[in-house]
Length: 298
Image 1 (cartoon, one colour):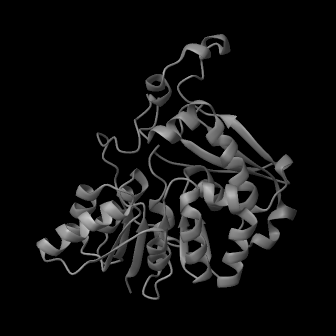
Image 2 (spheres, rainbow, N blue to C red):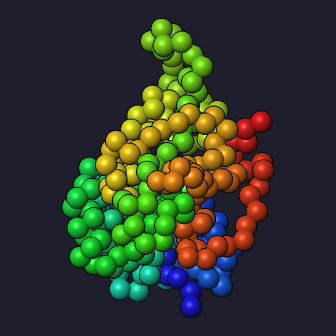
């Protein structure tokens, strides 16, 4: 049976990678709803390709513009707009899986709506846990939702932990998140006062949005990921560690009480592909020249 997916933030890099998986596996996935903030042209293209039942825009002006173009195109897609629209599609009874890739705290409400509705929730929005961790996890428990992390580091940790979460505290010594170090890894701290926004966004491995690129350049993104890991995996902060790994091949590791280390390795690209197929795995081959989400370190 196909998974009916709602992609929240479909015009971003995670959303685009999610739709690429859907396109490669039409026998396994079906797009039920898409959402974006303001990119009307790209959303229209996605609607023409995937013909979702719903398309939601965060901004009313963009929503009205999309609705007019959808109507003229003859698509059956229903267009919604506003914050409540995201909650509506995330909790819709016909949705099986929600890809939550809206950037920032703006994605918290729809994540909670999906959790309370008991969806399989693929979480790429780390801020939802950072700003609302306890509330969010209470919603997951209330709805008996399945929460799967999408960030490459947290997905790697999830894949490296024992299957039974009840054993994590007793069996695991610590979690080790990897960090590329960003574009200023080899720079002297004394020179950082003079860097430009363009330099901060020129990540050596990844092609990302400007906010997350700056967060990565300052290492603030890794601080947010530590908070996210604390909520996702329930270990004390003292048992969370970060190591610099510029090649970005080891996505993260788990060290067990017996000193053994289990790591997840892979090509440096979007991690959303593995959790989408969980508990199985989908075959796919990355295009080496595709730069939406990654450069290829040498």
